[in-house]
Length: 115
Length: 114
Image (cartoon, rainbow over all chains, first blue to last red; front, side):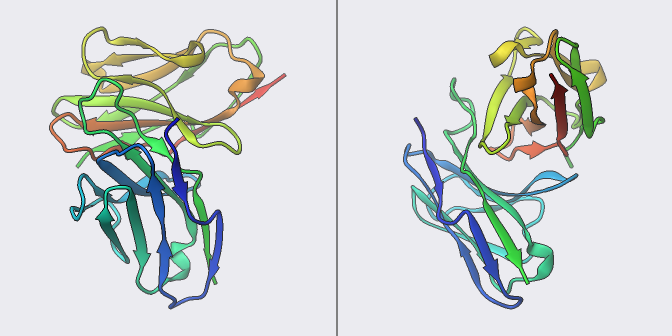
């Protein structure tokens, strides 16, 4: 079974702190994604990466950055956390578009609270 | 820009009732369509997907969805729901010409009463 592991299940940070959310997948997937999930808004794409050192902005990249130095690891960085970044953050990975068994595999999520 | 709209935010059904969850997308080109489900306390997982071919797609656990291109819709259906179908359901769409960016709808919470 594919495993997408997010380093923390719950995280509490203060406004202005730099926050790192880590995600590791064990299936050699090329694509990795960061979403945030908020009630009534569904999942919104923050950033995604389709290769090492490659990244593309999603729909809500403001206030976030990402790092993909190794294929299996995709980090989300909040440079200066703000209260409106309190959310559930979901990491996902997949094989490249078009593969027969293509689908997103999600991690269990990190519930981040910014006080 | 692509967008996905799920009309029903919260649906409550009794067991054995039939289910239809609406999903409409806005994009003029060729798309790939997905339904994902999140059971309480679990990861999001794929229910079914449509890439091409037969517009009626069958997924896991008795779910199916029909792609109607003229209506830009991909509604999810199940003839008879069970209590275990209680979950949040997300429709998602991706341009087939796009590298991989998947856009999700707002989600529909389904509550099935035993």
